[in-house]
Length: 526
Image (cartoon, rainbow, N blue to C red; front, top):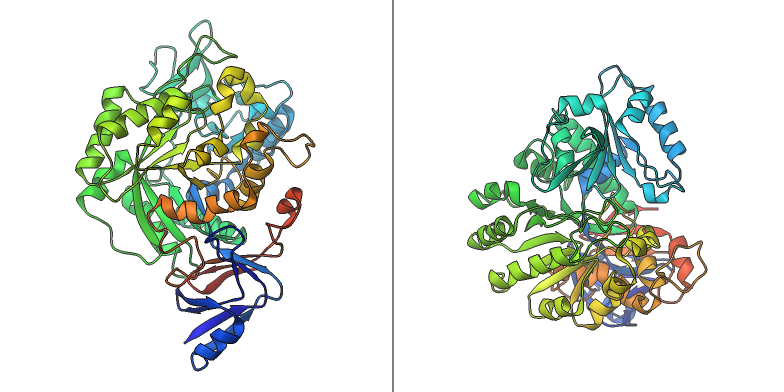
C-alpha cells in the first residue's frame, strides 16, 4: 500500500525547472511520478493515503553536507555567545551564566566572534577571572579553532609559562612569556581533555535537540563529524543509533576522525536504518578568523604569520595512506591554499579507491593551478555558503585583494566542472539550509543593499538548491537514492510555503518550512 502526494508544486531537481504533478510512494521508496489522474488510475487499489500539499512546494529532501550535530545540540545546552555584537554584551552573558553555577562548576561557552565587535576585542584571562572568579571557564570561538580560558582552566590543564606549544596548536603568550588565555587549535584541546566527561544522558539530550532542530528547518539528513570528542567512539555512535529511529528519523552519515578510525577499521558497527559511516576525517589547518588557516603567503593584516599546519607533511601523508590501506576515502578540512596544496598532493600520491570519492571541506582559498589539479581527482568539495555572510568584509583584510578572485569562489568551482555539496558547519553557522541558499545566491546579508561580495561568484537558485540535494547525495555516493524525485529514490521531501525559484532573493529567508518527510513519514509539520 502507498501514498499519493499532490496538490502543490513538486520540483524533481532532475534538471532546472523540471516539475511533476504528483508522486506515488510505497514505504521509503518513490514508485512513480506523473499526473494525479494517471497515478490514481495505475495504483487505484494500492493508494491508501493521500497527502494534499494544499498549494505548498515540495522538493527532494535537503541534506546538510557538513555539520557537527552533537555540537549543534550543545549550543542549546551551554552558553551561546554567537549573537553577541559587542564585547560588553558577551561580558554580561558570562556574568549572568556564572551567577547560575556552583563554585567549581565549569562555565562552557560557544560561538564568540570578535570580528563582530567594533573594537575586535579578545578577552584576556585576567578579565575572565574577574567575570567568573569561582569557575574554570572555556569559551570556544565561532570557528572552533580557537578558545579562551581563564586562569583556573589553564591551571587544570597545566598550561603555564614553560608549557610548549602542542603539535598543530599555539598557546598565545604575552611579551613576558605568560599565557594570555587565548588558545589556538590543538592548544584548546589541552583544556578540553581535563574537563569532566560528559554523560550518556547529556549526549542523548544534545543530539535529540539537534535532530529536532534540523527537522524543523527542513533537513532530512546531515553529514556530521562528532566521533572523537565525547567519551568514546562506540558510545558516540551508539547515541546516534538510539536517538535516530526510535521516535524520529533523519539520515546521518558519520565522518570518522582519523584518531578513532582504527576502531572502525577493526570492526564495522552494526547496520542501522538511518546511520551510515563515511570518510576518514582529517584536519589540515585551522580557520581564517583566528589566522590559523595555512596560507602560501603571509596574512595581509598580519605579515608575521601564514597560519599553521595541524600535521607535518609526513604525518599527514601517513594518515591518508592508512585510510587507503583500509579501503577508505578521506574528508579533509582545508581552508588555506597551502593546506589545499598538501591535501591535493596527498590525494594524488594515494588515490581514492575505485568507485569512491574523497571530500575536501571548506576550500575557502584556492588558485587556478590547484583548481586544475582538483579536476583530475575523484573528489567532492563541501562548501558552506553562509561563510560569505559572516566572513565578509573582514576576510578581505586577512587575505588582501590579490587572493580574492579564487577565495570563496563557489561559482568558479562549479563552472570548472567540480562537484560541490552544500553545508553549514553548524554550530559555526546556522543549520538553516535556506540561509545557505540565500547566501549562495545573494552573497550579502539581508540588511545590505549592494550587489553582493564578489558578485561574479553568485549562484543561480537552482545551483544553490542543488548543493543541498544532488550535491550532498553525491558526497556520500548516494546520488541514485537521494537528492532527486524520481522512481527508485528515497521518499525524503522538504516542503516549503514558497517557490524558491520564483520569489525575490530576500524572500528566501522569509520562507517557512511546512514539513519534513523522511522515508515517506512526516518527521516535522509546522
